[in-house]
Each structure stands twice: as structure tokens, then as C-alpha cells.
Length: 108
Image (cartoon, rainbow, N blue to C red; front, side):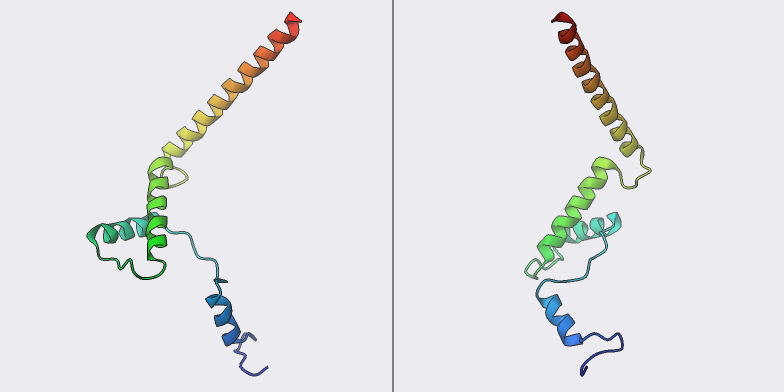
């Protein structure tokens, strides 16, 4: 077809899809990028009037808070400790419910 590039796609058609909100998947923001964006936001060097800037700042804030809460890396001790705590609490709840049901079953 006329207007196709080497990959066989129409560049005009791909621009129209991108302008309608059909953009390619983006890579997740790293902690270092999030910290840099937040530093620039705190200094006031980001232009918040540009479209999408506030969403990027909000995502940077979420990434940094998630890293503070769960740890920056999957091998972080805070993640392992949080998972262990959740497992222990769930096991305690299951044992308590099973014990109460068993007591009620024996009583009647």
C-alpha cells in the first residue's frame, strides 16, 4: 500500500491510534526515577501546566511510598517480614475458626 513503512504499517494510521489514546505499554517507573521526579517537583522545576505531568508526579509518589512500605527490592527484608506476618495472622484466624466450629459441633 502507499504510505507504508519498511515494517508494513501505515505511519499515519499509527499516529492516529496514538492520538486516540492507544499508546504502547510503558515500562514501570524505577525508584531512582521516582525519587528524581519528586526532587524536581519539590524544587518547583517541573512545569505542571504540561499535559500528563501531574499523573507522572502522582505515579512517582506512589512508587516511592510503595518502596518505603514494602522495600525497594523483592529480596528486601521488609517484604519477607510482611509476608511472614500475613501468613501467621491468616493461620491464627483459620485455627481459631476451626477450633470454634469444632467446639460448637461437639456441644450439640
